[in-house]
Length: 139
Image (tube, rainbow, N blue to C red; front, side):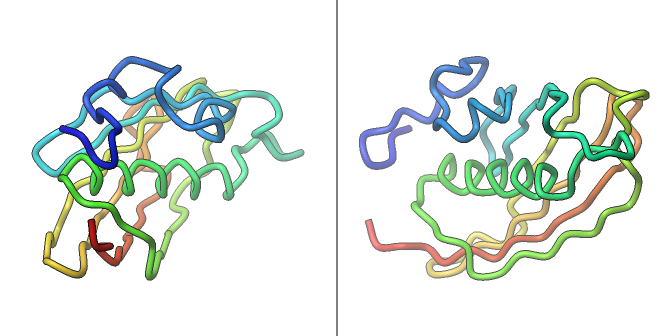
C-alpha cells in the first residue's frame, strides 16, 4: 500500500525506512496490517530520567507514531485531533531494554479515526495505554 508515494509495507523490519525522529528514537516496526501496527523500541540511555525510568515523552512519542502509522497503513493520511495517555507502570531500564507498542483502529470513519495503543515491556507488563483521535485528511 502506498500513501503519498510512501510504501508502507517497507516499514516492517526496516529501521532505515522510518522518519528521522523515529530512527533517532530507535523504533522498528515489526507488524502492519488489518488496522494494526506494532513497533519495537530499544531503550537508549538518553531516553531515561534520573530515576532510571523511560521519560513520559518517549512513551508518548512511541504511542503517537505507532498509532499514526496504523492509520496510514489503513490507507489514509491523518493528523492528530486529540490524544490521551495513562502511565500505568514505570519502564525501568534496570528491568527492560525494549518496549513494544501495539496499536489497533477502533473506529475507521471517513473523517475521524480512533486508535488505541498499549505499550508493554519485555515481561508483557502494561506500561501505558493511550487513545488517539485523528482527523482524516483529503488525499
